[in-house]
Structure formats: C-alpha cells, structure tokens
Amino acid sequence: MAGLQQTNSEMILLSWVRQSTRNYPQVNVTNFTTSWSDGLAFNALLHSHRPDLFDWNVVVSQQSPVQRLEHAFNTARQHLGIEKLLDPE
Image (cartoon, rainbow, N blue to C red):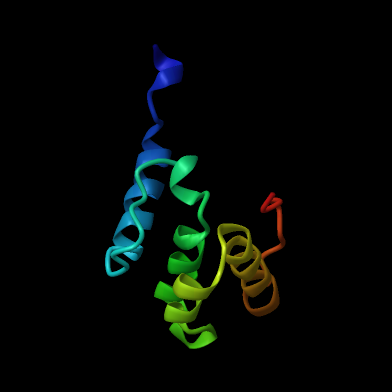
C-alpha cells in the first residue's frame, strides 16, 4: 500500500509544477507519467520561468509531441545547462 502513495516530496513537486503551469490552459499535470508525454508540460514549465526563450504559441500549434519534447530538452540544455536525461521516443 505504501508503494502506491506518493511521497510528500513528490506531492510538493507536483504542486509546484501545477502552480508554475496554471496559466497554460493546454497543460494539465496530474501525475509524473502521462501528463508529460505530449511535451506541453515540459515546455510550459520552461516558458513560465523563462518566457524570453521561445514563443509558446508556436510550440503548441506547430509541433508534434516528439518535436515538443525535443524542443523542451534542447532549450533546457542550451539555455539552462540542464542535460537531456530522457529520450522523446
């Protein structure tokens, strides 16, 4: 049963992500798995803290989920020094 519950740290992190992405109606983060698969949550999180890095509307309207994930990971690496640890595929 304990394995099925989120830890307090996970709940805090999830709450922070929700707060950070609340102004993005296309984004609904409810968990750490499926909520991230379309790439919108990663991009919204980046954009909410650094809107100067890219045009949100272009990312939402013109890219596939894999392209959005690549965009988020590449933007994080190039501008924030965060290494790419996941493969969009």
